[in-house]
Amino acid sequence: RIAGNDVFNKKPDYKGGGQGKSTSEVMSEYGIHFNPGDSLRTLKIRQFRERLKVRKSDGKPMLYITERCRQFIRTIPNLVMDEKTYEDIDTSGEDHIYDETCNLCMARPLMPELPVTQITEDDKRIEELSKPMSNQYDRFEHDVVHDFSSFGSM
Image 1: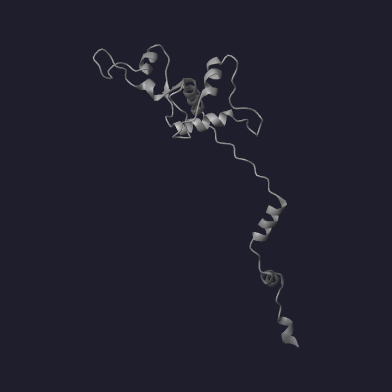
Image 2: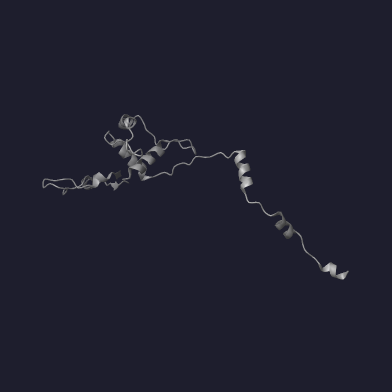
């Protein structure tokens, strides 16, 4: 299980301050263990977006949402981009499901699928013309065998 960094923070107790057990420590007592997720929000949103795309290689999506994912269906469409940081969402809204999904995506990060560019006939011709030309005389010198022995017998 992967969780955000706040799960590992010490909780305040009756003495004040952060001296109590963290949520992770409490859950460990019940056999539920957490690993810290990556805290970089820009990487999380990239992985989240990558999962929403349909892969061209096999035509399958990388994230399936079923009708039982009611909270996902309710909250994800309502997320808005942050006005200051375009690589993040506005965290003043309800983003718990988004954070959970991002942690899941970060557990097994994907490389972005690179777009396949089609090479046109013009591009092929330009590439052909851009290649360095070989010296035609170099080739001629290597192909001809110089035999001057017959000149001495005349």
